[in-house]
Image (tube, rainbow, N blue to C red; front, side, top):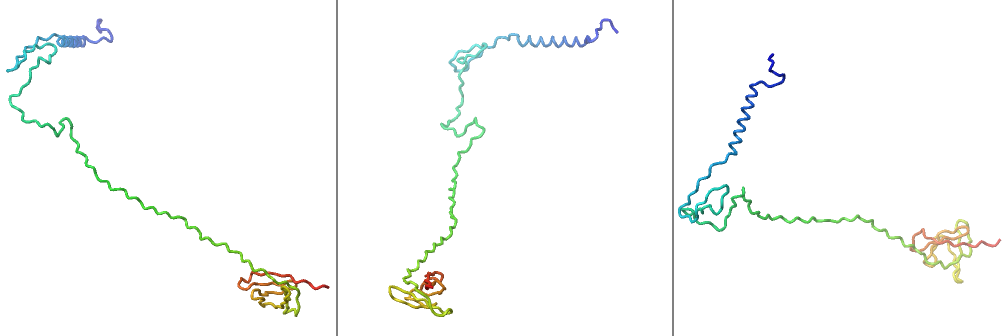
Length: 197
């Protein structure tokens, strides 16, 4: 082991390479910052009215000569149909006719209501003008005595009295009457007075 070598130190060849790179970087930096030589003067174009401009760090817009073309370009249209700065020009949209939306026919269906059943009119039988005053005859075919304003009428079961009243049934203490032209279930009952004991 060499006494000059320190543990962890780079070898001398690496140091030389590092110094060479550092020197080349400094040279490049010096060249880029070095002032340049003054620019050459520009001669004016033929027929130009401006004096020649000296080139300095910045250009003067007045010193730039006017550009003149020897041959003409030709006629320029007033209106240009194409924009050269656009990638494409979109076509003018043509309006399409949209068919009108058909109005749907709406059918309203109302729920069917039940047919109203008329309320049956109560049948009122005519007033019964007779009064039962007694009963007589055999038990299997009894006869009832009726009175109306002094007039006496004797009738059996099934007889029609005054063309309006039908004797339906003669009971032990009452008489049931029906009415001509009305349903048989409409009846009127008259009591029969009991004989004195």
